[in-house]
Image (tube, rainbow, N blue to C red; front, side, top):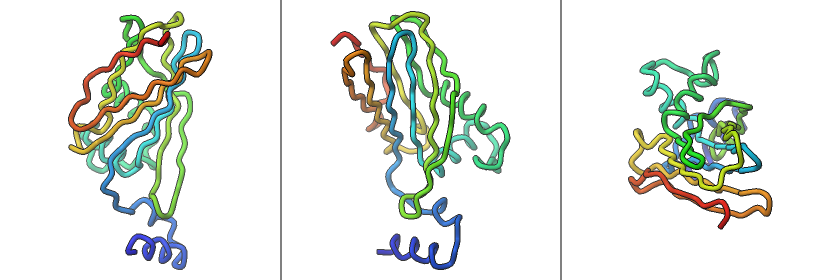
Length: 174
């Protein structure tokens, strides 16, 4: 009830910044990754307040503001590559940022999303994935990865949470 009242007050008072201050107990990221030909396209969604806290700690910059720093995208990409690892048939891949955006929701807060690309050089058959985004900050961090292997949209779901951020291996032919 308090959250609904806060959201209603934000609409009534015309505050556009209340969404960023909505408190949540869930700490999660959601990824949709698509493997096609020699690339892995990775779209990740993160709660903006959690991400900002993570980037502040990673950069050791307590005053960092996600939406005001001109180097936020490059900082995110460095953080992402430090916390997410993808190997294709034993070859370590690095992500490059393709696009980013923000979704605002008065009730649920603000979510930042990033589209990244891993170039494998050739079509992978085995992927090893580790996703430890924000796990250093939140003991209850959960990172969900839904991986689609093309053609045929073979679906693989991976869960990194409950303190276990170890790499998981996916056979793309299964």
